[in-house]
Image (cartoon, rainbow, N blue to C red; front, side, top):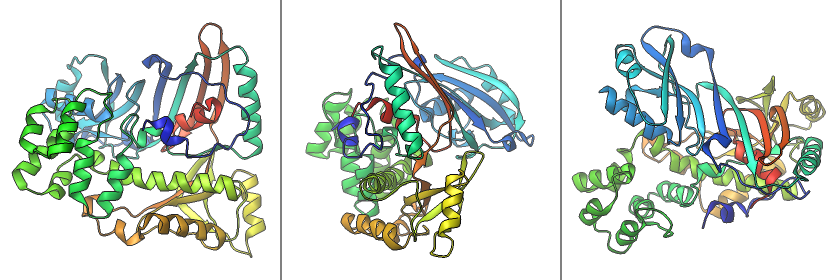
Length: 415
């Protein structure tokens, strides 16, 4: 199953026909520029660089920089992972003592520019991202159809805030399934799926198929290509410890947590899709949890419950763009909805056979408290135009954790 087939289960909010087309035909068609938190430039212990990369996975380029500079990849801080098949700009921090080494590095399709001294950049230390995206292979009617779709979605309050396909995998759409197995304590089955699932379209798939059939770790270490570094890390650690649990815990933290995050994202997408079918997205109901919004940026840690008493007050705040209805990021400390929205949350959990306690019983680095996420996206500064012989060009800003591909999905309707 590829991501298009996987995403076909999630409903569109817009009912108008899409423009079709293709994104990321060239890396330059998808440009991402990070807007950092100003606080990262406070302090002297770390050197802050602007990293420009083309056709690089974020973790892969971080590891390459660390290897060449002679430092641990854990000493390099960054606020979030960016698209691989794209041209992206983001800030990274390295120990101040490594500034000269990093400054002198020459890596293919990578540019590093020293900006200032500051502090270690942690995941989430960003305001959001600016995008410039080209959709190719569209016809001359694309501009007018885009205009109609955007008008319809503005009337409905925004774009549905689905987690994008990057969370689940583009061709190996298994991250969420691995996450569920980890939640159930099935570390051996999770490893078998991570290492052995193959659809036959990618380099290394023959080695994956062999592992799926034989579960022979030694053979896998011989056959798995070097670029499958996380798979090889898992295999090496298992060979050393005999424990798939310890093997998963040996992965870099951002990679280790991808699987649980993917499962949380899958459940959120299911909730959002069901809500599109059954309940309003832009009209709070009694029992809903809403998140505060300031300057178009949702503050997901500032939430309050909708009650019979405050219902009209909250509806006015939503209309003014000062609050948004939220959905569940399931976890052990999540603030749960009540009423009809709460029943829908419970129904999804029961259907999966999962309890919130399962997120707490995970090994500590994997444990997930959960939270809330707004159901709608309102891109800031959205502009678009048709470029003859090229396609549609879009520019907009999105808060952190929001996917440009989910905005484009409503416009393209390509799956």
